Image 1 (cartoon, rainbow, N blue to C red):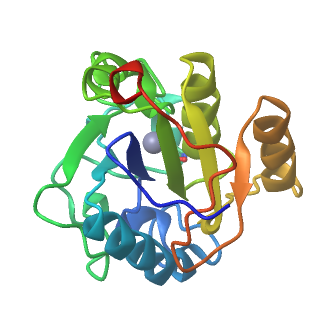
Image 2: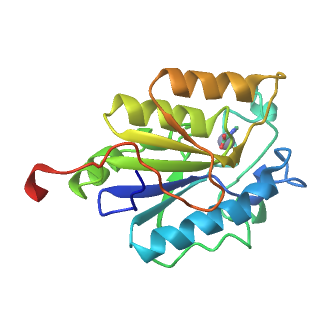
Length: 206
Ligand code: VGL
Ligand code: ZN
């Protein structure tokens, strides 16, 4: 069954920021290849229209996840720095809702859904399904997807729209398996073809 995005859907783009792309301080291999894929999905989402959310890793200079503070990452996505900017080719429409995360110096802030109020906002908007892409598959994407499933959303991971850091070889594949085991549906389309297995309705629509 082919269906389309509807009012119950949201496209959730995770951390498509310069520092996570090749040449960035925490560059993810192939990270730039996801940009045209995300743009195709954005185009389809805009036709509906369906809500578009974009998260950004938005750390203070002394964030505890940085190596200089004893953490495991190079300095990345410092608030207002060039590296924290979205990729210039990413065509985020002006209605895109921007969610900043990782602001608390003591908290990794991997999951977008740990941001106060986001789950409630999505629920209040009547959103039931999330379509997720971005970086990185084995960190922020994974934790966001797992939280979204726990919160009761139907979650579709757009596989061609994500890449892994692979700090350890195989981390990306393992993350994929964990997401799938937790109930995420894997989308293979780079074109924004929405093929939901089920139609999702709210009571009010029946
Ligand atoms: C991320 C490592 C550190 C991510 C953020 O967006 O996946 N990874 N901070
Ligand atoms: Zn970070």
